Length: 105
Image (cartoon, rainbow, N blue to C red; front, side):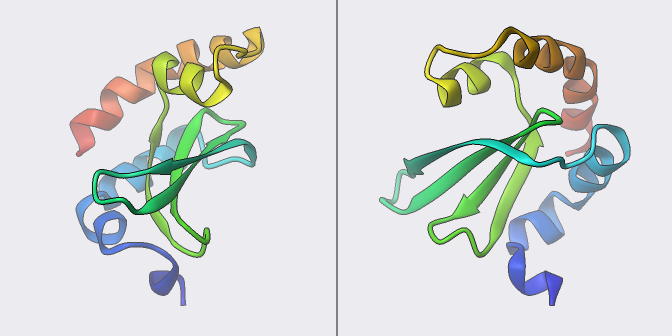
């Protein structure tokens, strides 16, 4: 059942990253969402969580495409320049994990 709700990319290509995030910062609850369009014209959602993780979902939010620990630029973009200071503090704290997350990939 779970496999149908996540992309091949995340279940095969990024499985180590997912496990790393779940063991370090966790997934959390969605705080902010932003709709986007990829280079092929497909709609997607960026969902920022209270643990500093960015979830990328498909257009109807039925499938998780990928996830990663967000950096300050990604958070600024989703908050459109009105990022609460506590969010920036969390993102700064998570950067030690973000650097290691990228080595997992």
